Image (cartoon, rainbow, N blue to C red):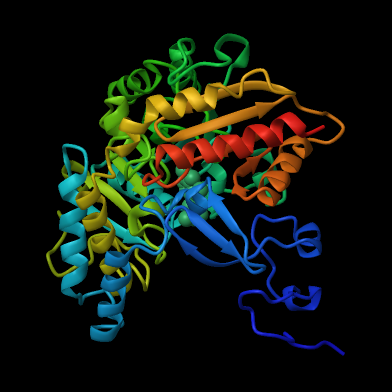
Length: 450
Ligand code: PLP
């Protein structure tokens, strides 16, 4: 008969396979993981501690979310105080002061022109919210035929139906039927034949933005509501936009009255050395989707940043009527709002929103020193992000990078594997010494791997 857990899940405890059966882990190779689990029980600063007491350097900021490092006192205190004071209040026809405070604080660091915030609980929900907002906006303006959504190949916009549909990852789509209709995709911009081993933005490929003109010719602009792209497509392997690409895409959107949604779930909150990725690339989208580092990963939260012309288009009905028929029970949850405020305080006090810019030159040198190691066909960097791409082995797609991820973990370093690529994105508080430690471990793993 089945038994429950046999022991406490705490430090220095041997976990038995039966303890791991119940949790069907997301985006995981469950069978393999459960044979040789990697389990954390503590975290502090730039380190995790495993259940067998080993320190692991967090080379990925958790899942790209712990930008200020782990277990930061201001954020912990803000959450504690909040849960003792007001545990829950919704935001449907009522409210609580922390949500308004959090929204104002977020707007104070947002790119120019963003004056409103719509709260969600995750990146996926921010994406759904922005896509629905875009379609409803055009309808509110009397352009009810503008309903198509344009994503991009190799884009990742979360896992809900809209986000999966505009996303461009075959593996994430193929099991789930026809997905949402009326969606098309731009070509991706990743071109190692022209741009391998580039530092920062690649030189070649801005003209790929003109692909939007191809879709306009095919579908007509009168049917297209929005284009959604990540400034840097991180989850699919750190695909850095070619110089000028995003500005060119923005210009084509403007020409055809197509909204531009920047999915900044990863690039917002300092990852590139500016508050938002849109600041870094000098673009001014209509909507920005965020999540992850908004609470430094502590409490699930997302936010869509909205420009006034979008928001105001919804404010034309009778005042007593709901203006946007959309929202979540936990939109603007008190704990998440407190965590966001604590996070913004920590970012401000420690200058973390610009710290990646200070570290980027040193970081870039260390990333590019990986060139020439076995099977490495590209390395690239931007802000405090790096990626290494390995020569694909057609017989075992992704295996080479996966093996290196496992070996790095055994050597005390957490990296993120996606396909044949390994991404690096440590907390923004990392020191130069710790950057050295990260690359010392990682380069040794790459040297010794078969
Ligand atoms: N959009 C982008 C650009 C992301 O990188 C992610 C997650 O990595 C998401 C959306 C989905 O966020 P979540 O996992 O919080 O739903």
